[in-house]
Image: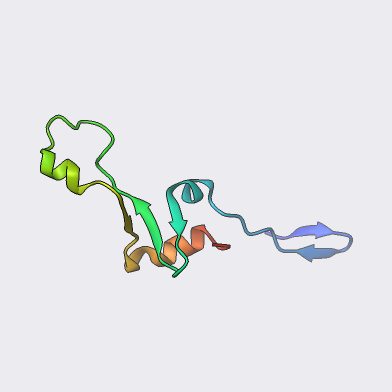
Length: 75
């Protein structure tokens, strides 16, 4: 999609996905951290060990890094 501007065409701006910037943080080493899933609700049927092991943040797997980079081009 090209937009006309004073007789010439300019590419549209690259934008960071708002959902991605709320869910991911890029660490100084270049890895991306994310929160754990399955810890929001329906916790009564989950074991204490399971809930304990879901604490904290983890790295995004390397197979998903390309999609994260596409969603956060300036990170």
